[in-house]
Image (cartoon, rainbow, N blue to C red; front, top):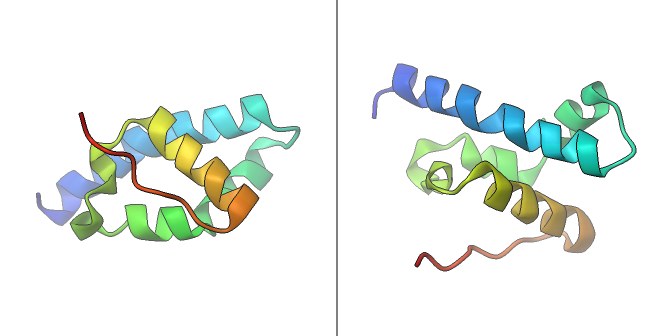
Length: 79
């Protein structure tokens, strides 16, 4: 996947994650966006080699919640 394709992939994956954050937390869009972009998960997601983009936005949201609660997250097993 080239850099442009990966940028498009992130542009598709990230908004539903932000939507879940704002929907399930008592924070506004700006805080949700800022918090997610500063997370370890986003840092890893934004590296194409991590292959985190293979996971669904809901799975990534769950991983983000785990990071907020525990400081880390586990990689789900693929079926």
